[in-house]
Image (cartoon, rainbow, N blue to C red; front, side):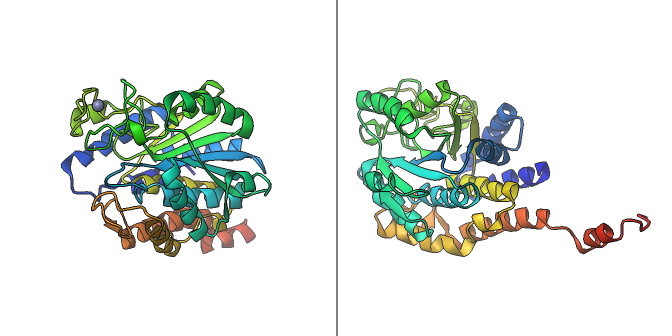
Length: 347
Ligand SMILES: [Zn+2]
């Protein structure tokens, strides 16, 4: 499995984006790897497989709201969340709770429904086992801090997963990649991650720039190379690099890819190929997100693209991850032959 883990990480850190500073992904990955001491997507999946028992709750958070450009968030985030939720439900019988800013919740529900996961509003979902619940998390700092403690008691999650979720910087300010302050519209879900870490609940975070929950503690490359990394465009002057840390940080070229890889590893570890959605499902998931109001993060348009890349790239990437884990689990015809003929000479 370690070799599969290496290849999963290699695929999700391929640089398909034009900006030269995107090369910092390699450095971000090296930092994450040094910290986890394992292939990172595999480490996240191993943690989930260990922690989740049938009926356990896993919280997934996704969504990046900027009122002008992305009033209902961007396309990167919810599709990966839906793919992972599908894997966790199918392979581990987990109950999945999504938390995001209120305007993002219709997008997440659309992603889940398109992925074939019935999603419900908060209260309805609590009565249905193995449902996907979608709820909002407060934007107000003090309310969020209180709600974080309440939610950990109420849900008793065994793991928290953040993907493309803005995290605070050292001055407590939340920034877009362009360095602007979006604190007024961002759910302060960092409090939930901090509280979970204090209780030794597994935390996983995927980032593709350095301002996302999970990239805290591995962001020196972000400060060095990303525009606005060290100094932002807002009066705080603290730069966009987040300080919110997790147990398993996963740097990926696009956040969705990070969770596809975790889902692929869950599928491999549990021997459940049906847990990983096929690539051909992705266009329909992303189209559903766009119809619910999200936009492509690079072109800022309501197009079925993720981070500027067409769906053919994402579909192919998911298929490559899928084939990788399936091929490695299959015995070759020669291995099968040797199994039933153990006394054959080996040379
Ligand atoms: Zn700032």
